[in-house]
Length: 195
Image (tube, rainbow, N blue to C red; front, side, top):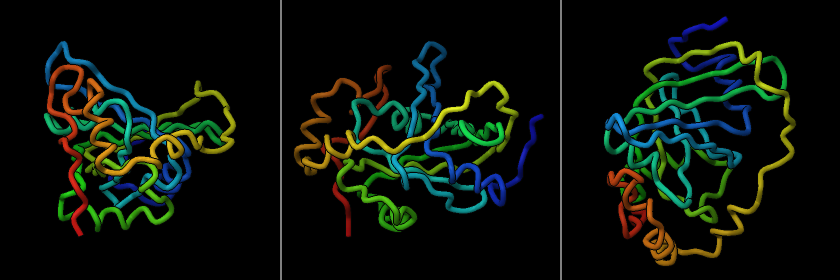
């Protein structure tokens, strides 16, 4: 039923790259801290960098739990499941790092996402995940669901923002600069992109 993989390649890579949505799970070290689970799904915002490393674009939103947890301890699990075709669930357990816009690696990493314009989505960071454990399981209980298209609401909401107005938006939110549990989240003001 389940299998462990040494690398992300071949059929496994094709499967995760073809899924329109994936999920991220993180948690703080504190035993009573808030576990976070988030869906991700803007087409073109996920990339396999190499056989052990994946990345996704972290866009504007109303919290920054994943960033806060990664800054504290780096633990993350990514999950994809087949809503169409043969049943399958793939999980990548690993160590994640938020690469902020002022990081010298940012522009080189951004080149791995040629099929999405990040500007109208309020790009905050690129999350880079190094795989520690790669597994799949059957997915027999996952229902069939049809993908229609991406929603355009996120783009429409944030395309009117610039760095200054995004910073003001983030400063008004309770859980951007700090997580629900008070961990450091997104650095504010929003770090500028360095040429």
